[in-house]
Amino acid sequence: MKNELDSGSKFYADVTAYFDQAAQFTNFPKGLLEQIRICNSIYKFNFPIETDDGIQVIYGIRVQHSHHKLPTKGGIRYSEFVNEDEVKALATLMSFKCAVVDVPFGGAKGGIRIKPADYNVKQLEKITRRYTSELIRKNMIGAGIDVPAPDYGSGPREMAWIADTYAAFRFDDINALGCVTGKPLGQGGIRGRTEATGLGLFYGLREVMRNAEDMKSIGLTAGIEGKKIIVQGLGNVGYFSSKFCMEGGGIIIGIAEREGGIFNDKGLDVEKVFKHRKDTGSILNYPGAKNISNSLELLETGCDILIPAALENQIHEGNAGRIKAKVVAEGANGPITKEAEEILNKKNILVIPDLYLNAGGVTVSYFEWLKNLSHVRFGRMEKRFEEMSSSRLVSAVENITGKKLESAQRNILIQGPEEKDLVYSGLEETMISAYHEVREIKNQNKKIEDLRTAAFVSGINKLGASYASLGLFP
Ligand code: NAD
Image (cartoon, rainbow, N blue to C red; front, side, top):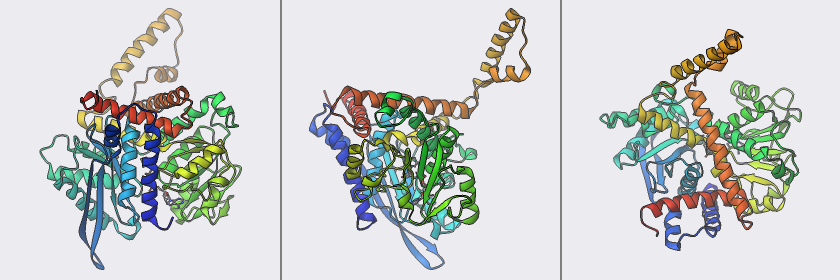
């Protein structure tokens, strides 16, 4: 690929090609499929900010892919490579992703073309607030309109600035905090959002790998335990995916970052590696690990599971033939090109697609939005009530059996749910049931050969059904 613009065009071309491929397995008329496929609104803008070197013009964009359900939803990417096609691809994926996991939103995505590391915190705040006010001017943000979230290069801090800017302009909107998700706890955020995408990936991967027959067909035993894993990217998605996989018994043998990679066949402690990178500014020279200067080489190293969790188009025609993993679990959006996927499929490598596997973030964003709209923390109403009911039950059993539980045992049994418990439980249920829906679609139609096509079919069917209920399709 010549440059990042080409990379964005390739990404969008791949996403629409996946759509077309899956659309053949649905029954909707051509016109409706075109409506489902196309991006509904695109807003591009430029604004000035003052830096020490004078005035700089910043490019911003927001794409709303589908208005079949409102609000639309999708993160804001902060990267020097942001371009229209890339954001269109990401917005399109969001519509189908939300549909696959039954989150009642249309898809959207945004971007600010900057390299965050080139700006100080004050400048980043200025840029974020100005980007938000541009969206407010065009009525492209709000709890019932379009709700951004973090993506590559942005996080809770940026979301807090967005919420604060929106609330300042729309002070009479009682649901103002629901205009953005991924916020810090003190500003209407929800427990469990930060780790949601990685945790969702773990729940999804664990469910896919639970089935011994399915795993046998690709030469693996069931379960994550003992499996060797390589991860690309140690940002939000990569860090939490590897942390949860490690806690679930997986062995993280390699981590690739932009400055290079590290490898240790006996396993790396993800939290210690993260701290090492924070302290030294680099993943390299981690004690006991081998440095790998070209981090892309690490993706080609033998392992059971490869988790690309950095950027799109990382596995392409040029390196797909050398991938040795048995499972590729897409943490990032679009990390495999279409041509590469065909090569991986031929090699009997199981690809678990982004539009299912990294949907944990938007699922918990949905919970955060519900919390903001209901103005009450999950668990607040029922925690004590449930504890009282369980306590009565335990006391009744104690009276019947004549045996008393130790107070520590009793506390474990009667403990009511905290917000985080409910979020984790909702996320786990979502990832497990969505996978079985997708797997069922694949198993019911022998012509559907891969999980990505099945996931797209699931998404298209749900979007189509939604238009049908509006009377647009008999
Ligand atoms: P992030 O900014 O937190 O982390 C990205 C990491 O990738 C950084 O540590 C960066 O240094 C690293 N990286 C960049 N180029 C690299 C390269 N060439 N090789 C190896 N590492 C490289 O971003 P994130 O939020 O973790 O997002 C990562 C991907 O996951 C993106 O594709 C994003 O769209 C997708 N995603 C994110 C979320 C979310 O909730 N954050 C949800 C769904 C999908």
